[in-house]
Amino acid sequence: FDFNIGLNLLMTDLVTCMKHKMLRISIDALNRKFISTPVPLIKINRLDHRELNKAMKTLTMLIQAYVWEDTTKPVRVIPRVLSENMYELLKYSPRVPVMTYSDYVLQNFRRMDESKGVTLDNIEPIYTFTGDPEEAWFIKIHVVMEAAFAKAIESAYKIHSLAHLPEEIANRNELFSQYFSEMASSIEQATEVLGKMYDHCSPSFFFNVLRPILEGTDKAGGIIFDLHDKGAQHPVMYRGSSGAQSSTVPALDAILSLKLPTDNMSKGLQVFLDYMPNFHKTFILSLRNTNVPDSYERRRAIGQLWLFRRKHLEMPAEYITKEAAKKGIPPNQVTGTGSTNIGLFLSKRARRTGDAAIEHGGPVAKL
Image 1 (cartoon, one colour):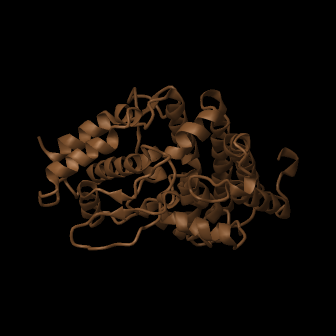
Image 2 (cartoon, one colour):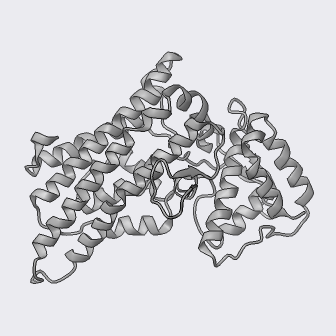
Image 3 (cartoon, one colour):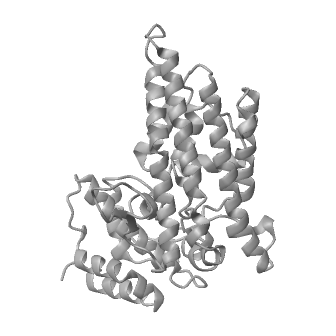
């Protein structure tokens, strides 16, 4: 019996352990068994990016589950058996040591038929916390939405590359228009996918069951990683897994040169960059200040991004604000799992994107 087997068993039984409040007990038992064993305990090829991601996902999800198994009594000290191995992996893949959107969504699905695409009827989550079909649907919607955005991200890369070629290149403006047109269509498809969230994930389930498990460690008052060579430590606070940690829309903001307001919300968005995979963050930063000519197709892409943001803005109202009101919680005290005032955050960005479409003479009749 080795440490890898222990972790794999915990992940296999994660739903059952969470349901019966046995996850903390099981991890504590694992901690007692291996606390005197020298690290690293995880046996993976640290040069294999896929193995590293899988190990990181396993540890971050177990840490998340350990903290929030009892959502009324979050635990603040992460056992050494998890802490030591997490910090060992961070040497090879620097990042935040907690569960992110990438762990919970982007790295957490499989295709049932490998010969078919990433569609709602052909994917399933690898792990969930509750085992409930509504949680599975929540993850699937985000995965398929990201897949729908893929063409827009590809277009962003092509636009960025084209912008750095000589202006004399043949058909340059036509290529810009083609790429922006493809981007607009991709954003429209992603918006359609997002609207399907209501089909099988209810606001009541999200607010009362799933959301408390996805909260950040800041909502627990911070956590302490038990590391044998660190001595006494101060609690560290991290945001919870959130769609705000997706790199897709920030990348589109960057390539479309949308100048969003500099305020507490924009500062929060800068923080979320550190919750994204490193190469996603690098990609977003590389797209900023890309000089591209204006066109009807670019304005259409801005308009479609506004429609997406408007659709996205409906979600916190239905899934968070209205559900919170049923419990007597006022809107100004409600935050998302990423610890932002999500309604204000999204509404400002939706309004600014709409303003940009109008300022540039966008196809407002279609908005």
